Length: 253
Picture: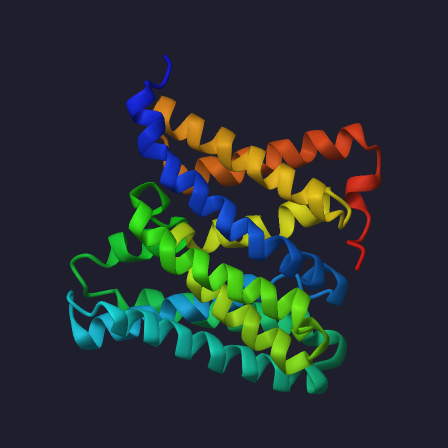
């Protein structure tokens, strides 16, 4: 079974969305690996999702920009809290981040427990809606990605502890509603880990993972987010095997 030209045209915005997510997430992922806070993205993404769900519950189905504001506010607040706890938790920081993720995930489930569309909202939070991305949706994502990269590489935000956490939170918020929590995590960690911190190699690995995952999703009607995560991990495993133990080394700054 093969995809027609029309189907590839339908998948094109989703692939470009993936490339935009990778543009910011690969350098952020290298920094996360360097700092040893691998699960920070899961926690922040889940907190952002919780903020969006709260805004949706308050404002109703036509919440629109309110959901974005709620997600960004929650993510920023969660990032600042985790940054504040970083100096107090010491070697237990990763455990604290894990607790934050579990708390936000369970609060999301409790919030949606009596919502007739709760399961759908939670599924969207975890696996995203990348297949429904339109060309118009890419404009704000592209603008934000350009600004984030300028701040990261040009303004040196990565050297500021608070700046890193805030930019990380806003970047995760911008992407989690498009690709979901799981794909945010995979885009941050898998390419940077398998490519040993080499930026161009990580970008290439991530792009191949998105392409293969979308191809599998369109061919066999699989959930796109899950298919991309699995494809990216398989590509990363193949790259790591070809490079020997290179894929298992810590990311280089």
